[in-house]
Image (cartoon, rainbow, N blue to C red; front, side, top):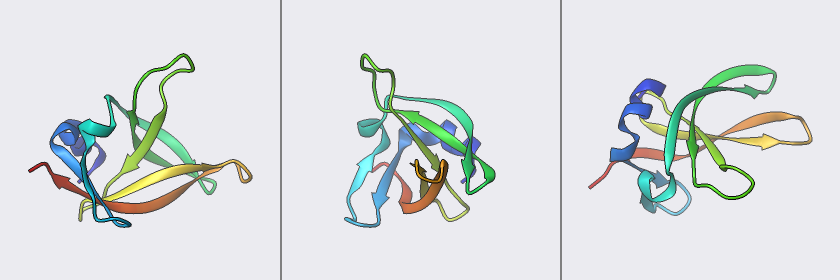
Length: 97
């Protein structure tokens, strides 16, 4: 699945996490998906889809995801020591049951 498909379908998807095999609907974790952002990954740039978890007095915490043709779920975490994002494979996107 490409970024545009993820943006369009996210409310009908869950993530099956590699570590626990738990399947959690994305709508149980996220409130809003405004679209793509560019993140710095090891000196290069990648387009990721940004998801907001909710709102508080500090703003909206964000999570960045990307998929591939096999619907794998990748996330980006910020490595503050290197001032770059690190990409991690955390599971698969699956259709809600």
